[in-house]
Amino acid sequence: MTEGNGSNEQRWASPGASPSPAPPVPPIAPPPEPRFTGQNAGSTHAPGYGYSTGYGTGAQPGWTPPPKPGLIPLLPLDLGTILGASFRVLRRNPKATFGAALLIQGSVYLLLILVVAGVTFGALSRIDSSSTQNADQITAGATGLIVVASIIPGLLAVVAAAVLQGIIVLEVSRGAVGEKLSLGSLWKRARGRIGALIGWAALLVLASTVVIGIIVVIIVLLVVSLGNGGIVAAVIIGILAFFGLAVVYVWLSTKLALVPSALMIERMTIRSAVARSWSLTEGYFWRTFGISALVAVIVGIVSQVVTFPINFIAPIATGLIDPQGQNGTGTVALVAVLSLLVIVVAVVFQSITSVVQSATTGLLYLDLRIRKEGLDLELVRYVEAKQSDPAVTDPLLHGAPVASRPVPDESPWA
Image (cartoon, rainbow, N blue to C red):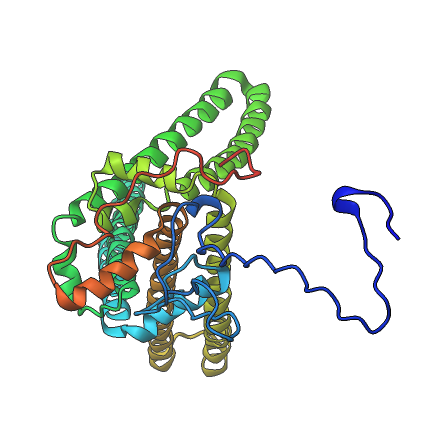
């Protein structure tokens, strides 16, 4: 008995009869070759570098971890990897990192103490030897001299911080490909770029000074020319300027955070490095700012926890030894020792803080190049090729053009 016709026809078979053969199963197409998605779409990983290209005979899908020739795994870095690697830089190569930081920070502190102490001693001696007629003029001049003497070491500290950041960034970039350089080798690689770092630091100081100076002049003019109304206007402008400058500082410091990295690693000019940092952080403003701020908070809390006991115990110990406040020889010696201890601890932890924060900036630079340019693939090829050809081109030196349409950021600041 049949129902319908053509291909829909069905035949009845008696019980026990042999069934008709099943139709053949079409072959299953092999899985496609794994490819990147998102910003790295179009790039493929070679077999064995964190991705499998298919299924083995009768085996489950395979996965091998991404290569890690040195400081970091060669893949886009997450928050935990960046935090861990920032502190691992100190343990991995302490002589070149902590040694450089200690040398630079110690020199700045020593210069600060010598200059400020010497100028202050000379100024106070001049005030003591002045006559009654010119005491006011000498006091004003001595005070101004002390202020200037305090500013100059501060400016040198900014320059020293920029140079240290460049050295640490070089260490991070070479550590990513498994190299461990000495301090002398890092200085040789930095040769010719120290001037650019100092120039960049000088531009930052000059721009900040000009902006703050303009605001101060406006406030002073309002107070002098408008009386009580000018004072009220000056207070309002001062408050608005403070919060406005804070917002602008956060924005610009984040967008330009990678300038030292571009200056040192890609050996760009200052103008090109500014454009490079601005382009790399486009679409990643909040990520760059958040990680940098988190590391700054962590190292700041640790430094306060360590230095607080010394600062707390010092006045108590002084009071126990000299409760009458007679400033005897023992009291002076104790104050000198405690002051020296505070300075030593401050220099050590300032050095550690500088290394960790500079390493964070270098890691963010590498992470953004990996995410936007596929730098991890180039570094894998470089590490492999370098074993047979030491003269192979270093992909860190010349970055690929950044994509014109990066992953969008929800923030309008990006």
